Image (tube, rainbow, N blue to C red; front, side, top):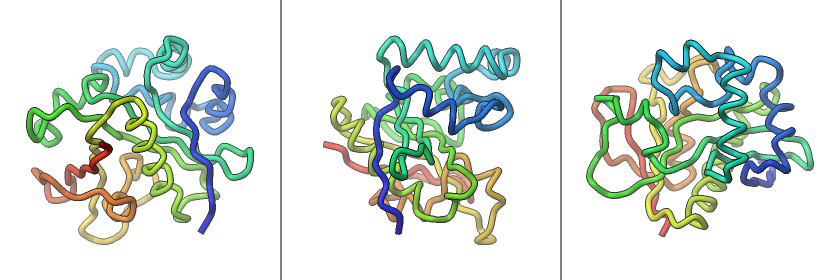
Length: 188
């Protein structure tokens, strides 16, 4: 298994995220803003406007996520922040809050193609939990895919797989869809 270093995204390593995401902003100009914006806004600002919006979050010092490194090469990304920062989660029936506990959410990942299926997501999750804990979080929650067929194209894996969450120590706390569990880990 790869031994990766996981570091929070800051203005100092922003250029590493740009390298990892490439000119298309990871997926179709998303720049990891899909969960943070109302759908109509996200659609209008795909690409450069999403990049600037995420950059603004980072410049403000607000939680955005963590990067995984193989040596000094950025190879993976995991968004992590307080749940209320992710507007789309608040409007989801399937991913609605489990209870009234304050949680931090891990809604998405991006792993460089040549590093996929090598355990990067589990290490990103461990780093995200540590980061959230250092910021005062007591519970970290994710919303992975749990495909019944056992296989799913990588392009649809941006929320992660339940198996990676289990490997990182998360447990299922709710399931309102056959393929979308809500998984948690205590950070406190």
